[in-house]
Amino acid sequence: MTRHIHPTAAVVHAHIVLARAIEGSLPIPSVPATPIPGTNTLTGLANGLVIVGLIACFLGLVISVISMAIGGHTQNARLAERGRSGLIASLLGAAVLGAAMAILQFAFATGGHIS
Image 1 (cartoon, rainbow, N blue to C red):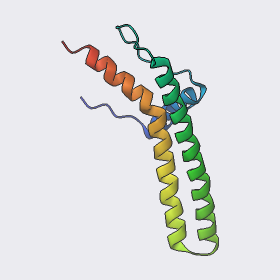
Image 2: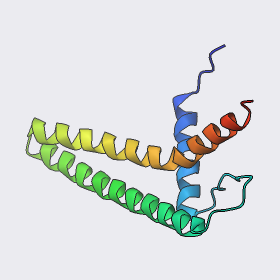
Image 3: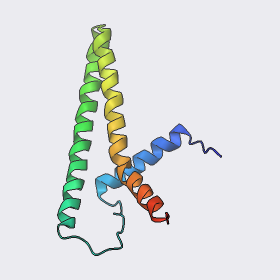
């Protein structure tokens, strides 16, 4: 049985996950073993990299919108197209960063059920 997700629902879910990632309120998967020394440092590093990635996506989004506006105003189709592709790449990058923890949690939970 195939489950279809409405595109609007997917965008809303990605927005919620992205907001939780920015707030830092996404739960970290619990590992049954004793934590390895340095785990907190690596978690902080990963959270910092996600924030840097989101900032890069935001800057790419702003530059792409400016490029689209200049390309449209000067009737330069190539510049407008490059702006549009940059906009799509920035949005997809932010969606992947926002959904990364949810994807990892799903994979970890699925792997935990394998016996």
